[in-house]
Amino acid sequence: MPVQLRPARTQDVADIRDVVAPLAQERVLLQKEAVAYYESIQEFLIAEDTDTGETAGFGALHVMWEDIAEVRTLATADSHRGRGVGSLLLEELLDRAERLGVTRVFCLTFETAFFTRHGFSVMANQDAVDPEVYSELLRSADEGVAEFLDLARVKPNTLGNTRMIIDLAARRAAKGQESAASQL
Ligand SMILES: CC(C)(COP(=O)(O)OP(=O)(O)OC[C@H]1O[C@@H](n2cnc3c(N)ncnc32)[C@H](O)[C@@H]1OP(=O)(O)O)[C@@H](O)C(=O)NCCC(=O)NCCS
Image (cartoon, rainbow, N blue to C red; front, side, top):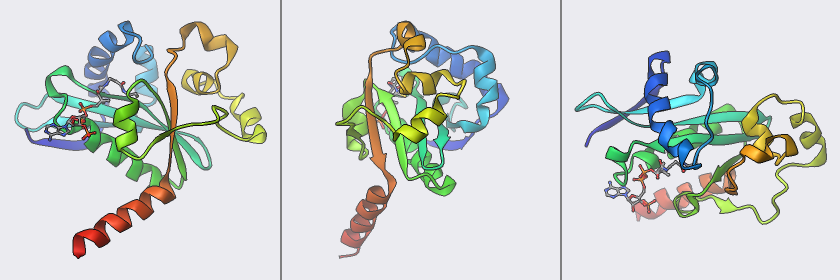
């Protein structure tokens, strides 16, 4: 199944919402208003099935602070699961994070095995950020950031998933070792 990654367009919002709706029903992903997707469309990557033109999957990278971003709303359509689409999207979002200059990427997920295989680890200390950045992030109006900070106002809607993190310098080093090994 050939898949191509591309930046999302406004016309993708309907497909994104269709895939997210049942996952939100199962409380796997957060339900968002349509306007939230349009406002953040530039954060999204789409994996397009080049045979059928279908949306195979998508994911977004949301920058939270100078050195921190979050992978969010990463999902593969049921019809395309288990064929490497999620991995392709996640790796490209992490490359995008590198290019943007952040050094750590977080995610909130139930898919801990999948993210672990991509170099994420469960945050031993669930405190995400130092107190100074925490107080700055409190000013954010973004619901995902509020969930990330575990704020009381969003608690009734939070999903109870696990906070994970990847250090991009460690990822770079691991990739360097991989390519060195492949040259042997
Ligand atoms: C997490 C999620 C995006 C993974 O999507 P996916 O496209 O199924 O992921 P992949 O196919 O890349 O990887 C899943 C497994 O499929 C198998 N797989 C991967 N590539 C494959 C291929 N080419 N052929 C056959 N099997 C393959 C592997 O077992 C893989 O595990 P790995 O990580 O050890 O490689 C998907 O399960 C999902 O949409 N979950 C619900 C939303 C969610 O929880 N998102 C995360 C929080 S934002």
